[in-house]
Length: 314
Image (cartoon, rainbow, N blue to C red):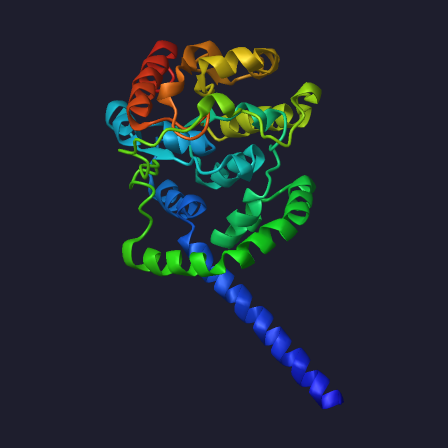
């Protein structure tokens, strides 16, 4: 009987390891989160001075990085991937590759300073596609988030393992086609699909927006980051994100107090203001932060204009 139990235990462990190895391979097919690897390759290879764009998916959907690089005359790295990674991680992951003379443009979604600063389920996806990211997770709060969100994440991955495997084999053939070589998401370019932007929100559905308070630690950590980059000889700027006009009007009472705190951070260069980046619903794709191709090109030109006005890149 003992021998039988040992065999059951052994084969159970073997099955568990095998399934998780399949999940790791399946992570290769996640083009969305998986783009972080090619972004880090580009970041590490870029010479200084360079411009680094930091933020969530709104950054990947929101700019023509090739145009920025051409106009600014230096490498530009679009590091935007997923808001659920949390701004704390987004700031931490670039530090080792920032050198004297570099310019950092932080372009966060507003909810990063109300919640999500320490990430959400996206952190689990991050570690699946980029295990070495564990070294850039620096807060106990991030580890608590990972533990809290892991059960649902793992269950979802198990359910979708067949699809993930198929995508991974396709990835081996084609590579990551969601992003271009500059790190911009282009998979939606040319799509005429229309999403109900009016029914979406800059805050997640599970959040009680009547009870939100600004995360003081998030503002403090961001301010500390600015000083750390200054000590390295780099300059940090803040770019407020683009929103539908109706969404700004709906949540102006949440945006303005945050704006007042962020613009007061010492040595942080303010590139634009929230009201500079309001567009009609038609400019957005599938969320209130994701722009369609034409709107992203227009936003790129506006950013170049802002940078010239404040003399950010010299």
